[in-house]
Image: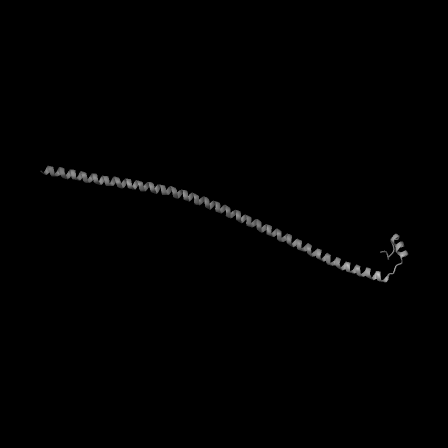
Length: 139
């Protein structure tokens, strides 16, 4: 009897241990699946990290290019301002010359008007003056 009970207990213990082992095996398989999923997630994270690093590199390159472009634009603006200054100076000189020419023109017109009023030249005199370059009254 005692021996039979021990056998039954032994068989029961074996079955319980087998059930525990089956449970542990299924937990191990579940953990392996989790481990594989974690590994896949790590791979995806590493890929995302590399993409982010590439994006950062491109962004830094774009920022440097933009800064360079802004510097060049600044230089071009300085050149334009300098050219504008030179142009305005030339324009002022031309305006001054134009004013001077206008004054000279007015003065010449007034002198010519005065001479035309005061000198009454004969046709003979006019014909002779055309041939003589020294005459003051040449017209």
